[in-house]
Image (tube, rainbow, N blue to C red):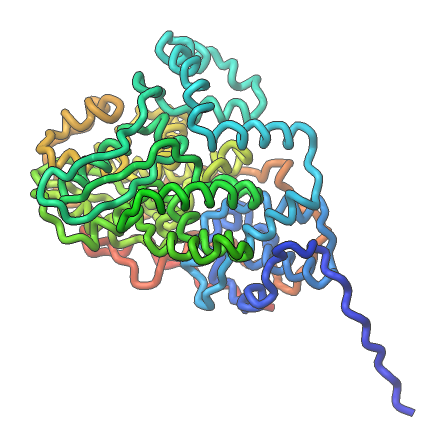
Length: 528
């Protein structure tokens, strides 16, 4: 008599019923391994469960009821920077952004954190997204910096005795401007024949600590014939909340942003912070279950453009004056990977006469900033920052340029750890603004960045050489004890050899010099 096969009943999912990771999106992953060389945590540690493929396997196991939502699960999801480099590398189009964001919301609802971790996160998320609270905090920070106390504290070594998260927070403090209480004007008239009426996001951290970037953005838009509307009392866009699993708070902030810009009646919403832009373009997904807001959210997101996208699409009428300086361009992950905006910043920078653009080796690998990741996970963030700084120094650039202030703070912190002088750091729109206004390199630096190191020159340099990985990368560092994996998960994927370089976007070329941005990555490991 043939033996009967018993079919086990399906186990209930370990996720709750509110927006679990979509099973169809999970099934898009074919476990090919192209994501591994692109993933910062896999590059650091070579651990399968700290790769996108491994995390998706854990999500699938939990969705099938084969793995609990426990502290091991939380640890590997927390280790993810959310840089979305895996999406650029993935040939199957896996929407990892939606998967990790829904999973993090499940974690916040279902997996308890330690009291210390919960308190630290509560402080961050009750402060950073609120401009009024940041302005209150800015006053003592201004005195701390201008009195010389910050320099004394840093030289004394006291920070080495502080908890790692507190020390990381101090090392990443932006220079508080004297005008931190000033608010951006709600209306900026075009300086030439009006062409478009655009809205501008002022941001939360951006409008308090980087108001000069917003001012430069408005001037560039006005010079290109745009009437700029920056609605008063803008809340946070919700990016920090989305990326940290606080989706209810993010949705509430998204509704407020949508309503404000609907009232402004603008043609386009221009955004100059990469993390904000990636979230605002996904409001339709964030508010997908809200019948009153879903359609409005989709219509709003369709109007959102990063400043580099917008200026590339709008034929330029403002003349560019020479700006003879050598800069290193650093890709912000939420611009390059989450939004797919890669060529546009390089085209805009290339339009500035005399500007030399040096690409940073391993340009697709995250610098470790990743929103508040460098505060929540300072040890791996610093390892990635040190790696990026090594490549930055190899460019011999006079300044570093990015589209995200958080990345620039991360790089400056890494330079201090390496006992290197800080390099002037600018948002790329500041260079466009300087070129349109006819500023010299020295005027640009005096107005927006630290003093140039004495050994550097602002005179035109020789043509930039293709970026190559430095042979002096920081030595491999042991994985922090708090990041060590547990044996709870076993996958059918054998551990693959640790790659030497991240995966580059297909067809990406060095726009200014015509050579590959990244060295060819290793072949993807085979799926066992």
